[in-house]
Length: 398
Ligand SMILES: *Cc1c(COP(=O)(O)O)cnc(C)c1O
Image (cartoon, rainbow, N blue to C red; front, side, top):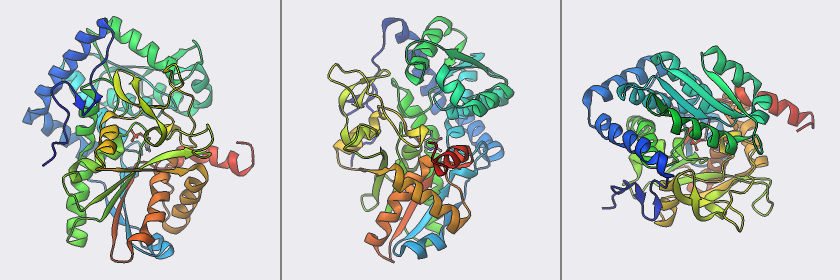
């Protein structure tokens, strides 16, 4: 049977690893050693499980979307309701894990970059709960665009560092946060926001998120008495998708679909379909698929969902595509908006635009599977954060 874990050096096939400048080798090795300990420590795992239950509100429900199913016609569509978690998305799952690990390592502070601010808010939440300082680096353009999330982070006690270099966006924020980490690592933990980056982060973030699939498996067995025919999740860096997929990877009869943002179309240059159109390269300390120019620089990317707007992808996804275990497809901005409206009107659930990519694919898949089929969609987050953008778009301003 296939082993779906990384090798000792953090490689999934030829993807992954830890490709670091010399000054970051020791700090990241320290994280890896600490995580190995935590992973096998029942006390750590029990405390993590307690927070997931009592603070996040897990298990999240698995909800049969009956009106959506009837409207689409075909397989039953179940929604794994990560949108009901505290803070409204799946990110809190791994941020709490990272926070607990930081404490275990004796760190007093967490640092991270954020683009749209979702990761920053989730990490600041975990830091507040666990009594850790928190410093979030953010490009100054994003600070202006994402003002409500900046206020949230500040209310949660985090320090938001505005980065004014270069393009003043996510890439510069990453560089700035890493520089600060390299200087302060003795008391600081770097909290990565997806299943990306140098080993051990892709494995660690996946492990923390895999509670989603463990719950979903048990829930679908209770509701349907069998495993689903298909799983569907949106893929940005790939954390919510790995969270749902991991528990089902050995089940060959379960088809698995990762949905990338096709933006304004795969034939335009306004998308972020990294697995579909990327090529092997190096990004943020990992070997993976990257949307890049001829010189190997990460290309500008676009998605209507800011959380999917990333030119790389977690190395395990690149490998799962290579071995053919997971199918990667894409949904355009327009298909995503249609799915967003449909779910809102038919089920009273306003989904995040990220999650709406997964819903869009389920809508295509359900008729193909037919009425005997069962699909689980990871509803990674709620859409309240996207309302202002939707209003702008409807008024023709976006
Ligand atoms: C950040 C985010 C994503 C994308 O990140 P992954 O690591 O690919 O899961 C998806 N959905 C929501 C709601 C998010 O906030």
